[in-house]
Image (tube, rainbow, N blue to C red; front, top):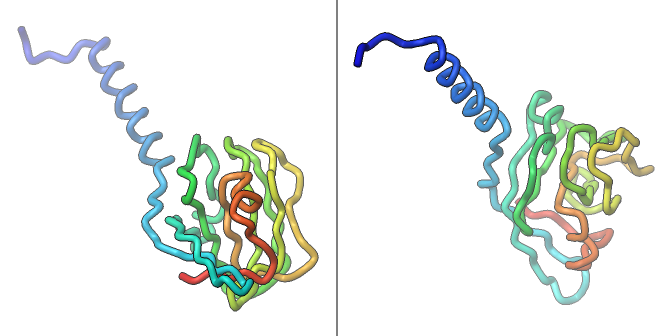
Length: 152
């Protein structure tokens, strides 16, 4: 056996490197802890494991190309100030519930069951500073509603 790399071996190495690069690019760390606190009398708290989207690049990418999230995982988009926010589901493979929060992290709007790959605008009439994306059906299953608060 020689130490010579054949074109076939080289091609395989390039493919593996490319594949690992794509996997790393699509890997999102859900390592931040947050809690959704119910506004009702029970003060029930739902524990979440979230990824943060703070930079414009992270916000543009969001959950695009993610194939699945665990039940209590999500992504929190953090903006510098309250404003009217418009989202879409382009290149997003999983259906999502979008939760709009004001500067105090109180829920001011919810848009449920957004369809994967859709370029339809997702927005509410109120201003928001934070957007929380969770698996579709989460809002209904856990009774998340306006006035609930995110604690991070």
